[in-house]
Image (cartoon, rainbow, N blue to C red; front, side, top):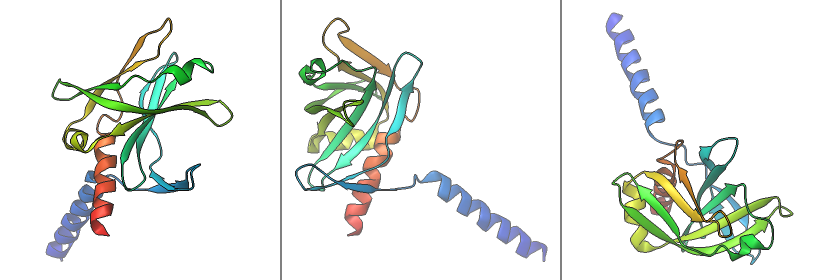
Length: 171
């Protein structure tokens, strides 16, 4: 009887650890304005204070991968549409990596500002293996470069990319 209880407790412990070790891959989809299907996960908060915040996540159309970022505060229209510089990410190895700017747009009746960066094939390797510690966005104008030191969810991009790639492998 004691042996059965110990085996059950061990099995439950292993199950709990395995569930907590792997992120839930809750992949959502929406139709893009051009009619194509876009797959994404709920945005994750990377940095948050009363003065500024940054959230975002990985998005894919099954051909390319993108990083969507939602900075707050954001410039008023039309200044935000001039933000076209590449994104600098500092990863856990201390090196600076660059993602190419893809799009800047206001959404939800101009209440949200979205920056989109292309994750090239060469970028997948370092994003899958390293955590993001800092992001630098050139907000233009008087502010210039805004630095977000990731305090929350440093591994989120790595985990999201891993989820998308595992789902593709499973098909």
